[in-house]
Image (cartoon, rainbow, N blue to C red; front, top):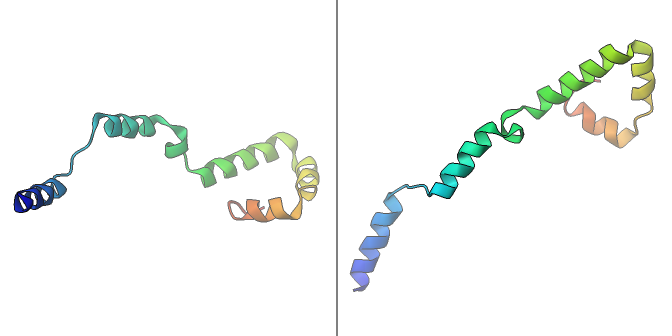
Length: 80
């Protein structure tokens, strides 16, 4: 009996199957912006939009008021 269970488990490991729930999750992820939008690109676009809406003077003023830690984190995503 032990040999039969060992053979059964070895064969089941070779089978790569997906449950309905896993399939449904993967399909939902294809439509979820968390998985479909590049955060770096999105952030850069938002910063560019802010610049174009505010103009150079106001934009520079706002950027100068950002605390050091936040600015450091922002620089990982864009060149400020």
